[in-house]
Amino acid sequence: MRVAMFCKITDLFTAPASDMKRKLITLSIALIGLGVTPLCVAEGTIAGTDIDNTAAVSYEVAGTPQTTTSNTLTLTVAEVLDVDVTLLSDPLSVPSGTGPHGLLFVVTNTGNGTEGFTLAINNAVSGDDFDPDASTPAAIYFDTDGSGDFSAGDTAYVPGDNDPVLAPDASVDILLVNDIPADLAEGAIGLSELSAIASTGSGDPGDLFPGDGDGGIDAVVGTSGANDAIAGQYLISDIELAVVKSATVLDPFGGSSPMPGATITYRIVITPTGSETAVNTVITDPIPANTTYSSESISLNGGALTDDDTDADAGAYTTTPAPEIAVDLGDLTEASGAQTIEFTVTID
Amino acid sequence: MNDMMTREKLMNSLAITTAKGVLLAGLLLLSGNALAQQGTIRLEHKAEQWQSVTDENGAEQMRLVKATNVVPGERVLFTVTYTNTGDQPAERVTVTNPVPDHMAYVDDSATGDNTSILFSVDGGESFAAAPDLRVSNTDGTQRPAGASDYTHVRWIVGSDIAPGANGTVQFTATVK
Image 1 (tube, chains in turn green, yellow):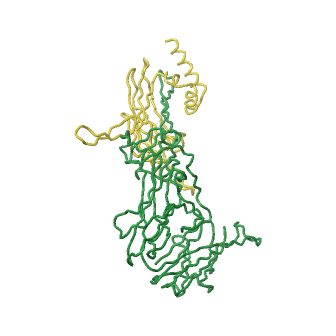
Image 2 (cartoon, chains in turn red, yellow):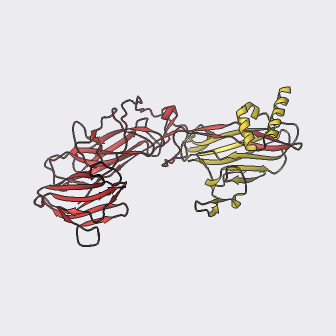
Image 3 (cartoon, chains in turn yellow, green):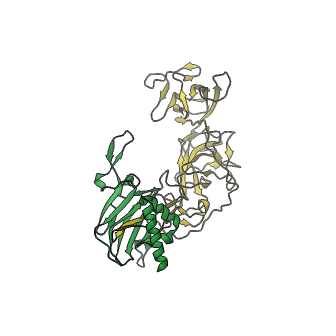
């Protein structure tokens, strides 16, 4: 079992879309245009940009130089509607009859304009053994506190009320929160799918929504169909690892303000419950951006661990592909009791 | 006719008072397109994009349509047609077209009958044939220029353009 944690110093800005008067346009308009499949490239020219072009000719008539310019052509860059939904959570081991349990996703605006997205959960996905029960009253949450887990600080998503509005290339972390039905067999798999659809419209690549793009320009559906979805996985195992992460900030002046030079001590407490065994449990936690890991600062249950990944002890600090700490907890049962990991970073 | 003569004179005087063609182009733009169109050679400039259409047999065909809205990654074909509307031959005819901002020139896309084609990589200050162009790396060394480095395309027409005659030059660029 591998438990990955995600932590951030800053959360991505997400504006509520309650004041957006755009309606979801479901008309499928046959396309003018775009036999060439539009590549949706990150950092593509921003929607609404005017591209002007004027040609010139110089020549001589009877030895007299002359110059003429052409009419000026103006092309307007249409808004490309594109979205990507990526699953961040590993398969989540959960005991039958428990919940709520969150799966973490990231929704990215891969188009070239500012766009709102409508989110939806679908648990009736084929290819699994059971359907998770979507939590009520809400099953979709913003990971507001950046913990990577469903927690009290997370904001519920209400369709049409706080649809995420994302600038080009911006993203937002989303949690799907489900309860696990009772009486499921060990090893059973349940899938829960998150979909995101561009509020302006979706459909086949090249479908056009005249005048519905940013600032009244045309919007064109990109290669994603302006609609993406991916499922996360619950795996029934009667061992649950409750993971709680907390942070203590110590600034250079003895206070607790997060400022350059301040240290942050992260504490991760893993509490196993259930009758089974979590085998080969490894806790990993990325070092947050804009911080530097304090070397040899990992501890497990108060005992120091080394950063060396090749030695016999359970701790490791690695920098490839990105800095992270890892602690190998081995096999955990309820009898193992709570495991407390601590490590320290400095704010750059 | 008198009106036209006056405008031609005005244009000539502009050409005399401005040393650089680039600046002249700017002035003419400010003066309005109507004035810009009044030279002995008339330029017609159009931009087209490819559209797929389904014919009566259900086969998909590509055709060119006037470009208005474009998206990143899309190719646009620019076509400039020059016509000698005067009553004397035009000599040393040279057409110059900037690769627009937010677009990249597509390699080997410039065409024009009876022309030699040069490119600029310095915003139109100097022009050379493609194999002779160099650009500076960030470390100060030089490398051969690629298509995406081109800022302008220039066509030098190899013969005089007789009264009433015309010609066409083209290039393709991709929206960044």
